[in-house]
View 1 (cartoon, rainbow, N blue to C red):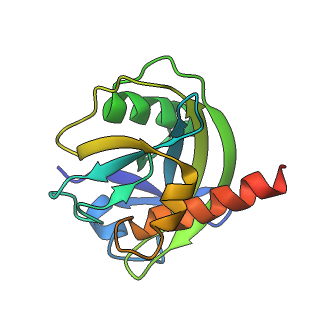
View 2 (cartoon, helix red, strand yellow; view 1 turned 180 degrees about the vertical axis):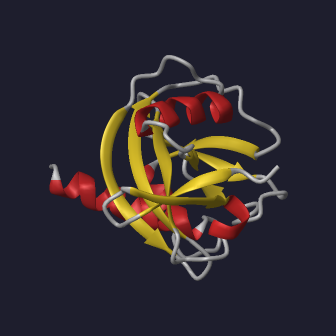
View 3 (tube, rainbow, N blue to C red; view 1 turned 180 degrees about the horizontal axis):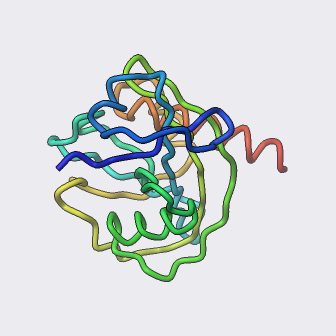
Length: 168
């Protein structure tokens, strides 16, 4: 079954609906997604290795948690749902960080990014994720441009680094 998603304008207002397969082939259709950066108590960032079966960035290391916002769903509720679906976490406190628009030749996303602290263990979704691991932010920064990380995560990381520099 093809997931239906909201199409939004650049201000996040819903302007229509379309199947995921159509949205992921048309960068003029903006859709909402959430990202969660999961850190442990030592400040290391959890990355997930995307499954080989993923249609976008298979086998690349990616954001701790990421997923689509369902039609009519609040972004905070979407983040909680995705945390549970991807990592098996239920009651983790989330902090909203920022929002931005990410666009490629095949899609455009309005990204809402959250962060949280959790040391694990994680009961991750093995259909979507091959592995998870914590790395220092410096190690992750050194992976940029090595074709190890998803392009979207490289963009997310640059937004995060700007955010922490602006708030320090």
